[in-house]
Picture 1 (cartoon, rainbow, N blue to C red):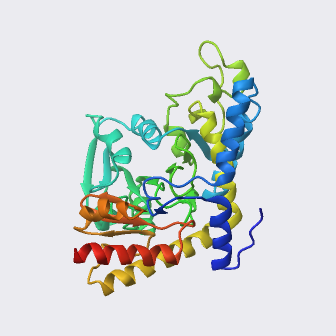
Picture 2: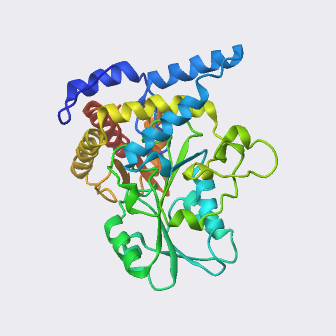
Length: 362
C-alpha cells in the first residue's frame, strides 16, 4: 500500500483508517498507547506462527529494520541508535554515568520514567522547576537537563531550542524524551546529547520497543553496564565470559531485544515514513485545533495548545461517561485528556464534543 500525500487529504486518511485500523470505539488515547496498524499485527501473527515451527528468521532483520527506520525518522545515522525495551532503562543507563553530586535539572511533574532513575541515585541532585523555566534555570554546574518534548499530563510543548541554547552556554548535557512527540513532530535528534523514545505511542509500535539516540562525545561518558552478548562487535564471538570487544557503534548500549515487539515495530515505523511525520502532524494538530475551538464554544479552555494532546483541567471525572459512549480517552492529573492521531477524523472530534456537552448538562 503506497500513499502519496500532498498535505493533509481527508480521503487519504479515510482510506488509511479503513485499511490499517479497525478500532471498535472512537480511540483518542494515543498518549497512553497507540493503535497497531493491520500490517504490524499481521507481521506479529506470522512471526508467532514461525516461532511455533522453529522459524526465527524474521527476528533479527526486524530489529535492524526498526533501528534504521527510527534513525531516519529521528534524523541521525543508525550507528548512533541503540535498541531496548523501556525508556526508564535507557535513562537508568545515563543516570549511572553521572558523577557523584551531579545536578540534574528536570521539569516539575514530568513523566516518572524520565525522572525517577535520577531520584533513586541518592548521590545525585535532581532539581525540578516549572517547564516554562527549564531553559533559564540551567546554570553553571548543571550536569544534565532532562525533559520530555511534550508533557504527558497536559500536552504542553517544551521550548527545546531555548533549552538547547542554554545548555550549550553552560556546558550542560541534554536528554530529551520524545515518547509523546516522535511520530507527529519532526525531530533532529543530533541536536541533543541523548534522545530516548518509547515507540508504543505515536509511532504505533508494540510495547517493548524503545530507542536511545546518543551523540559523541556524550557516548564516551556512558559505560554499557547492561551490555550482553548482542552488544559485542561480533555477537557470535561474544557469547561467553567478558565481551572482548564491544560494538564501536551505539549498539554497545543495546539491550537484548524483545523480538516480537520489533517484528511489529518495523512495519509501524515504515508506515510513519510512508505518510511522513509532517503530514501526520498536520492532520493531528488540525483535529486538536478543531477540538479546542469546540471546547471554547462550550466555555472551557484547554491547558495548552501546540500539540495533539488536549487536556481540560477539572474534567477528568467525565472519562467514565465518555467510555460508556464508546469514546476512549484518559484522565490524567485531574485533567480530561484527548490525544488525536492519524486514525482519527473530524467526525470523532464532533462526536466527542457532543458527548462532553451532554455530560456537562447532566
